[in-house]
Figure 1: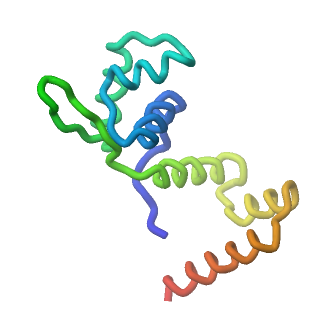
Figure 2: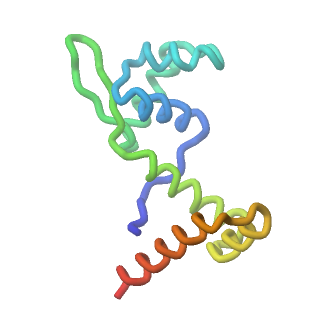
Length: 129
């Protein structure tokens, strides 16, 4: 599995990206409206955050008249992978094995989950050969 050079998103950036991933295409006003259910932000604040996400490569835009319509430039899995890597480094001293051990000891695995994980491990090992 390839690593991304993306740094993890902040909570506010992730909140915006979740809206984009869910809706596929958005305007600044649509993002502001979606966020307003949780908190009030000025339109300029939302626009600045969106421009920064675009500068970092998370978003791209197309012009529709005088309006910019934004869409995701990276899939949700890139963000999740970066967040998991950050969590492994922060809480498990960089050891994926310790993270998996903690998960199994705390939550356990169903037989189906264990089988899917075995399949993923087998696939990862065979791709390294």
